[in-house]
Length: 436
Image (cartoon, rainbow, N blue to C red; front, side):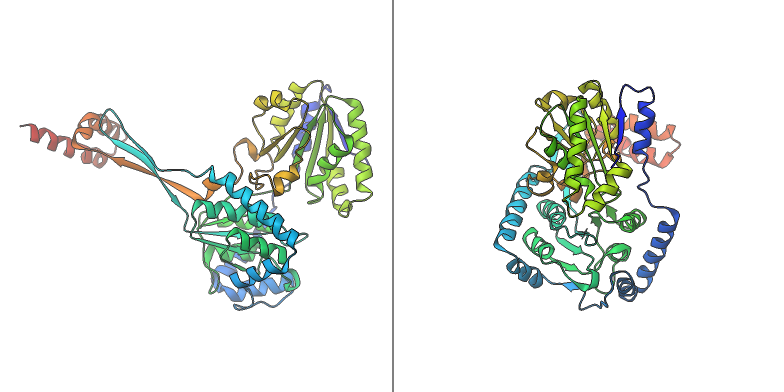
């Protein structure tokens, strides 16, 4: 197997790097048009359209009754899974909750020199819809990472949609929904489920925000319903960049492949200053691929989108990382803290040799819903702040208007908005009348 190799000392290094990062992760016009038709159909016909698409794409006949996943069914799943399943889910949920409780925003206010009291009021969203992938693999961890922060934020209604190929529910996903506070769910997925959450049907309530990853059809649907409701982000295929100056080649190779096994379109990049380590990791990647169950997926990913990059020093490694802006970044270094201040763009950063990104995926506590496709340049991980909104608070007395009103009225006149200015001038005149 040949994995692309780059060398930062090459004259065309930046061109090669840009080409590597220019993989097509967005959806084309054909997908956009198909999704637009599905959205319009579900918006118009509700459950009838939703179930027709479910029969077509997931292969089972749903109706208003059998698509519903009740809290009792989730609790039943909790008892159906193994003791180790429950222990792992509970520990993960507890750790995720503790971390996200640190993110809760609070109301605040202050009174300034002009006498105005200014502040911020924090309010949780009323309702959130969780999209949980259920195609090539089931992801109970995705339930935890989306539902727990919503619950911590104080969202009143948390519902879940999950595709169920052939109508088969995944017990672990339902158990995760139970432990993380999901109130009820629906056994539907795809663009049609996004439409149901955005517009509502006879059975599925419309929500204020849709969160959670999905395939290209789900991503396209989320993009198109934005504005009708909120969305968290447009998540693309998974990514990882591993920077190493030493360590175990087998560990580093496994870390490199950890995102590749998700999806043929995922991207894995290994960066090092050590040419010998680069060769050793390359060899270890091939050994792992001989035994991995999802080796075909991982191999396609690294052959089409992966890269092994040799850099002359760690400063260039940091510069390269900031260009990549990876979803996951492992600094598998003896002194990762020395590089950390140089990193500006990454979704989640893992420091040292003993923290593979999988620890963050499941158990560490920070959210694993992360910006992809270089959007870490301007986006952040999912968190409590995605389920809370801010309102500005402004309180002003007559003295406050007197202190700053004339200047405000002047700016209103300069913008040609006479009535804006009038609202201020009337109050200023009233204040002057009180003096006489």
